[in-house]
Length: 293
Length: 192
Image (cartoon, chains in turn orange, green):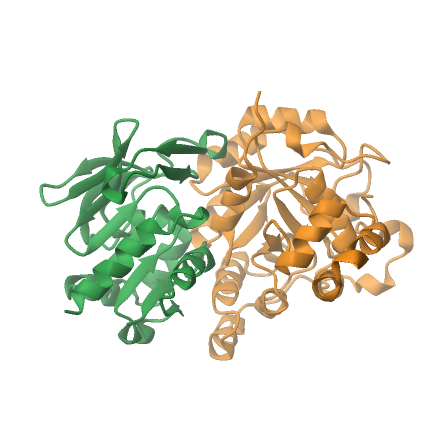
């Protein structure tokens, strides 16, 4: 079988730009997300804040539940697999999901290796905390990169850290001389050819989205102003007081991310945001962003 | 002369890149009051249901219909073609209705049915044209005033009616600027 062209895989991510991808746990939430203007939904059994609360092993969601969501909406449906669990990915590809998230939110299945994403026709998105991690995932075939942030906290601080880190390291690459790139690739622990591409083009070779801790329209617009091309919202919508209103407001904030007047309108009459956890107070073992290598 | 690219959601930046390559001034359009600044409008690929949400809630439907009826050229790709169409199914949704075609959303299926292919395109000259279909719609009816510029797998994929043009694939995802050049020429001609 010939490898699926990267253009076809990144193409769908291009279509999601300027949009919001919302975590949903059933067909009802999926329809609500679609009606609010979501560009895609992420089908999963428990949103990250519930995974955090419940503990235990978090795995791929039930195919039955994902299929119900695929049947309920006309927008793209994504679903998560555990890091390194290529058989979960084979199952989701067979099911026909539109994108697979190899996600640190689920319990990792391999402590050394991520999935070889070149082997799949379905495109993958992977999380990153810095440029080296992003480029390793792209080297493995990821067609979209998102920040990890700190999922399920409702605290934007880690997503901001990761976005700024990736942007800062791309800027450094873009001013280095050709003879300095191999040493930089070594420092980043990233594939040399992709490092060269980024140095030449000043951006990632795949779309760059934000995720992890988005709870308000302002959080979403902050990510966009920091250079994200679209935003994932996990627990932030359906753990808030009025999910429909908040979903609409975050969609509006992402489109009008540079327009304070529209952001003010989007931020009014929303009800309570999710309660949230201060990500900097979490013990090391509770951090999800450290998963993945 | 300036072309607007509807920037509510989707791959509007890719269309901007094509226009920049052609040396054509362009600007992002997010509000109705910006339409007066431009002489033609591109409706990009993306999620048509998301864009339609904005068109309805932010009172853009009528101004965009007026824009088309005034003779200013419009060019929609994929989701943009869905927004321009007269009739939309799969599921049914509202649209601008300025182009007399019927489209079925996600007509080819899901992402796994998306494809990149190449075809001859006499309307653009001897060089083959790369076609990028991503969860693409199918045009299953064209009205009497609509010219079919390209067919693929027995369906029209590029059509034009007067100053309104639509493609179900994504020329903006390729390095080939010929279709955008054609649109820029349409806008130039409309100003004569």
